[in-house]
Image (cartoon, rainbow, N blue to C red; front, side):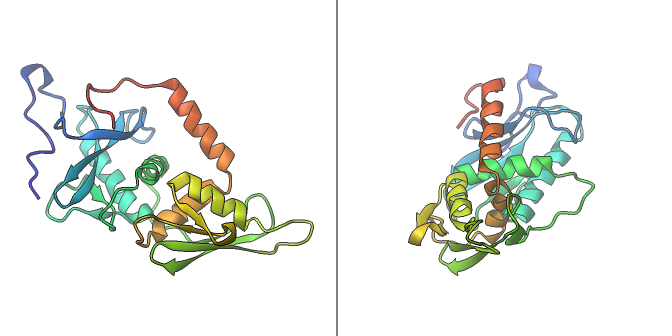
Length: 229
């Protein structure tokens, strides 16, 4: 894949600012990165001949900005199961299914930005203790992008949390909800185990996840012209 379409030649007044080609549309933004001097980082998307591609980029002229962007791209690959673009910039990512899951990509990017770089990167588990009950939430891949949600430890006094978790996952990543409300499916029909495992934490407290998103949107940020998706 060509690399010259990622960063364009800057004008004289932009000499120290890494400017990307106008074909990239912004998907999500971290206004102040706590782990790299409060620089601004963003996830961009472009549609290429071989499918959609994501790019983690910063307009910051700081020398460590490019390295931080590359780390977040790697974190998206490990924590969310995305793939590298072979032979291209380390900041590029793509979904292994060849399509683009916009809402899931946004949430994945924001989660990776919260990851302490001093801690090792590792995909999360598809089985976790429920934060709102004494149940254990399990997710099983059924193949072709479908996942069954179950909850061990449900009682008459504490009904199964599985339907609520499944509904939350469907909302968080724009998945379809099937078979009695305990099975979710990706429209691409491809497995995304790591991504589902990452979203499981947010699904346990959907209100908090949505509230955080609303607060972020209400603050607003300044972005480069033509840089929003």
